[in-house]
Amino acid sequence: MTAILGAGISGLSAAYYALENPKIGPLVIFEASNRLGGWIRSIKQPDGTIFEKGPRVIRASSHNLLDLIEELELSSKLVPIKFNHPAGKNRYIYADNALHCLPNTLKGMVTKNTLLNRSFSSVIWNDLIAVKVSKDDESIYSFVKRRFGKDVSEKLVAPMLCGICAGDVQKLSAKSFMTSLFEAEQNYGSVVKGLVKQKFLTMLKVKKGKAIKSEIPNDTQTVIKSHSMPSHLVERAKRELWRIWGLQGGFEQLPQTLAENIIKRGVNIKMKHHCEQLIFNKNSVELIVNGTSEKYSHVISGLPAKSLANLVEKQHPELSKELHSIPTVTVAVINLQFSENVLPVDAFGVLIPPKEEIPILGVIFDSLLQF
Image (tube, rainbow, N blue to C red; front, side):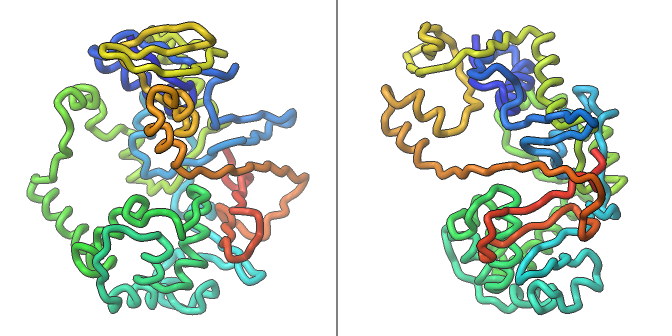
């Protein structure tokens, strides 16, 4: 029997895919709280407005999640935002007491942008003439500053990274977070040259029918075999040029539907069951749950690193120390509702660079998304 810790999106999706591997055996999920979904939570107001307390939109390039939406029969709830929609094409950054729209056309790329006070074509040129520096890794701030300029690092990339993960670009790893860009410089001497060459080589391989296969263990191949072909939703997203999407009625429907699906397939979800300790034995893993000892053949953690660190601290203090060392940040989500339209522009939202020293990462204009 396999135990899964946490009934957030990580734990629920782990159970969903684990069910496809007969070797894993029966599954039980332990959730410490009295609700499913973790950080994904949708609150419906009396007038029908949905307040999202966590994530609300997903990039259309997340093909695996689109596959999952189709498998869970949630396609009818999906609301796509295409590239030509104001929320799909318009992105703003607030800097120097003004809103600056990021270019979304070829003309916008070659004309001077108010945010950087230069054109984005000059940003590309900056990379083309920059000297390659061989490095094992560096901060995103340092990497972008070297290749594209300090202004791009501070005014463009920093707010984008804050919007994605609330991270500090002076601490985030370029190799880990911008792998393709970092490797493009290391392998080809330039980010732009590397990306163009990689795209060209990929097109050649696809054309010749020699696309490189991922190195996946045989056991895992059997698990993902049914997911190897793109779903109808993925094909539709490509054809219709989706940029992002959400779920009509709230994003919490995803974990709720996932839970319903796996429960029907025999997964036991135990609410208000707090795992207090993990003890690894030779042939099993012992869990102390609500003061009671239970043994399992495998354990899958869907918990934050710091929570997992506390569970292994007694038996594996060094591992616990490593898990505790993984930096995290706390982000507050505030939903505001107005009786009339107060949006200054039609756009997805606004990001704010850290250099502005305003305690807001960004704003999403939910009303324009029409979820």
